[in-house]
Amino acid sequence: MSNFKKWLETIRIGWSMVTAYRLNFFLLIIGPALVFYFIKVSLWSAVYTDKDMLINGYSLPQMLHYHAWALIVVLMAQSSNGVNLGEDIRFGRMSKYLIYPFNFWEFHTASFISFQTIQFVIAIFTLALLCFSDLVSLPSFSNLMIAFAYTSLVGIFWFSVQYTTGLLAFWLEETWTMRVMFQLLVNFLSGSIIPISFFPAWAQNYLQYTPFPSLTYTPINLFMGQMQGLHQGLITITISIVAMFFINTYIWRRGLRLFTAAGM
Amino acid sequence: MKSVLNYFNIYRNFVSCSLTEELSFRLNFFLLLVVDAIFTLSALGTTFILFDHIPALGNWNRDQLQFFLVFMLIIDDFQGLVLSSNFWMLSTDLKAGNLDFTFLKPIHSFLPMFFRYLRPSSVISLVIDIALLFYFADKLHFTYVDYIALPFLLFLSVCLRFILEMAIALLMFWTTEGVGINFIRLQLQSLSRWPDLIYRGIAKKVLMTLLPVLLVGSAPMHFLFDHSKWHYILWLIVAVVVFAFILHLSWEKARIRYESASS
Image 1: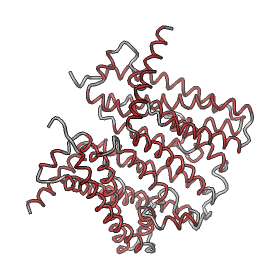
Image 2: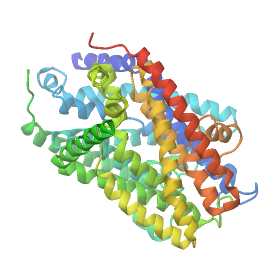
Image 3: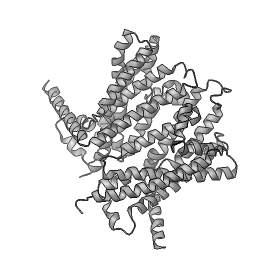
Image 4: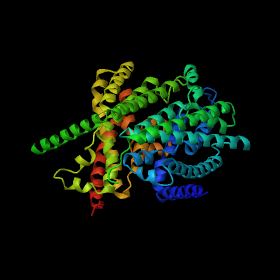
């Protein structure tokens, strides 16, 4: 019970920290997602030369719906980053977590939950705006709930990856390279810019053995009311989260042996 | 002349220090190369997949769009090599009061503020991207005139990108917290990595005039693909001159605005 209070308090502090620097939060988290969405809308609007044109089975409104849902998925699941985590290790701030009764993993996971709840509210607000602008049409209530639940699971996987890249600060001078690398791969291979069904058949075959389509393409399809891919996505993401958990535990134990903090 | 030599010697030391620092962390150096490679492959891959389903984007074909992308990648490489790291350091230095030392030095503060840290790993991706540029130029049957104009156009585009980004970076003197400003720069870069022909309405007008990030890549392309559109080059030159003047004025204001965090 006392540990539960610590979790709640850390989540509350996380909310205060995010809302204290609102402009920064907007420029760092929401701004990039909106600009990315604007670029994709501009690109596909230029690609479709007339209203009735179909490209790979998608009409322009369907493609715009796809990218509107992509915006929701990005806001909900792919916004957290491990900047603070890597810096805690690099600058030796991690030492305090070794003596606190609330450990490093607990602190960063609580911060993630705090961040994720704010992102959820922003995603709902954005979704309402998109609905009013007729840029998305909602699926059935049950499908919507399934899609939200699945996207939250993707968010946990995203955090696991960010946590791993942050832990690499035990060995690396800079961890942003790993984060950017992952972000670039996800943007390209998960269907963020171009739906996976546009990829050549051989690439689609290879991609189904990776978690990438499950990160953007599957949740977008779920939001659009298409349930195929749900089971495979669920299995892929769950296995990936469990695998990341074991990898993180291993890296943490190895990294801790290397950790030295000066000036304490 | 003595002053130029002095600046040259200082910059040579900046290059030497950055090279030593980057090569001290070899894994990091290698990862930077991998990031650049993934960036290039994903940019070109996107157009490959897109053009498997469409014949043209506006009036550009696949080779033209890929030439444009590689041209933009080269500009990114130059920026990564010379400028990028300094923007992130400026954000930290402003908060920590480290700029006091920069202002006290008997040289123009722009040199240590914007050109102190280099990223030598970008040279490798620069060489690869230049080779790709020639490959796509050959596919587009460029004439001698085009090949001669290319370095000049690249120079103008790099100048405009540098000036715009430095002007935006100076906003940090007003906001103090500079990470958000750096993200604005990154978003403007993302917008400019697609040609102006995909944008419409007010957005296009703003991004071609008030904040001409689209001119950086699109203006040279319009001229190279159709020489009758030479006015784009004139537009690019005017933008360089106007924004250099704006940068100068902003710098004067920013300097007055600066409050030492350490005092």
